[in-house]
Image (cartoon, rainbow, N blue to C red):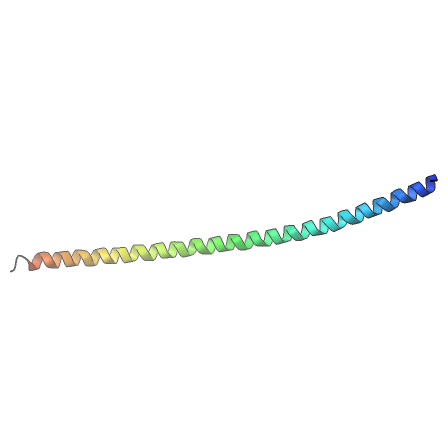
Length: 85
């Protein structure tokens, strides 16, 4: 093979390699974009879940306080009722 043919062959192989690398970079960019979008969505869902848990915890605490108050009133009423009998 003459030097010019060899050089052209090397250029052709280099062009193929660059084309493959370009395709791979585009695929990696797409994967990174998908991962970034997934991370953003996951983070948002975690924040929403955390907010719901905080709201549920506050509601549960409020209900327990109300229940404790009602139990206290009931015990007091029972205490007042028993001595009067």
